[in-house]
Length: 410
Figure 1: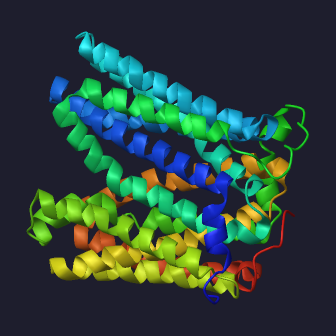
Figure 2 (figure 1 turned 90 degrees about the vertical axis):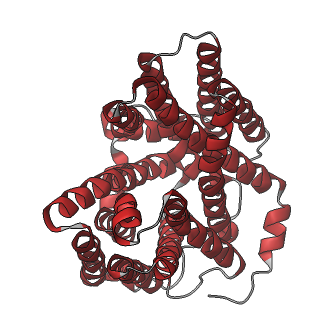
């Protein structure tokens, strides 16, 4: 890490970045809140685990189907407008759910439809937001900006679910109205953003241009290595999916303990993102990414073997902290190594692979736990992550040998 960053205070005084950060906290927090409220409400209505699972599927399917077109939209239209539209659609959906709840019209079909709409909006918002940040700050500020942006996500991830639970106690109608209001506020903040450079010229919409993010990534070993390393590490390291089993059967704790376990990775990630904003990585960034992935695997093994609650919490925090280092390095390499005209499509491919590996990682952990047991599943996943870091360091030497971040778009 470098000496304490002198640019961090100026970045925090950067009006555009403050608005971006605040909008990201609000949007991510609203998504977390509405996910909790929808889950509680569907279970109250049906008392069915299957319906609860279908809500998650309804939110996931749009990402699987729409992520690639979303990247193309991000590169063809003003990204601020795209993000605003996504947030406005989510806010209107929240308002519709509030009205349906108050009128007694709410039913599983309406909730499933709302989950699809919110999931679709989130699918378009994520890659567009990622491609928007480099238009707001300079290339030299981007590593710190990405770290602070990660802190926004983690802050919302910690606060959002708890706030969603509290709001649901008041009632689903007020909870949905709360979400609608703050999605609207996020949209207003995004509308006030000023970009450093005008949007790139629109590329004609062809099948080749829509999928050009794949060919671009394949032709850049550093970007391909960074995305695939993170994807495989996430796929293997899905220990958080087994936290309910660990809480009850291995650590012998209660629901409060489970909440602490779930919060620990986000707390570790938040703390590390603040550290990286203050002391950004500047040298041997590729090697540090491999080290972070290996540390993530090692912490996963420690958590898997632990039957002591006081050890499990810091192990999960280290996992979250190591993951943020990997995410910030990957995101910086991707954003600075990609021309602005391609950032939406490349960010979409990145989001699709990481998002899919998150879902498949939870499934893989569940299957492995069913076959071999939860401890074996977590430990094998951690060891596999360490092994992948070693293999990728041989397969992608340009990434391993990367010393500094690119100075600007490729």
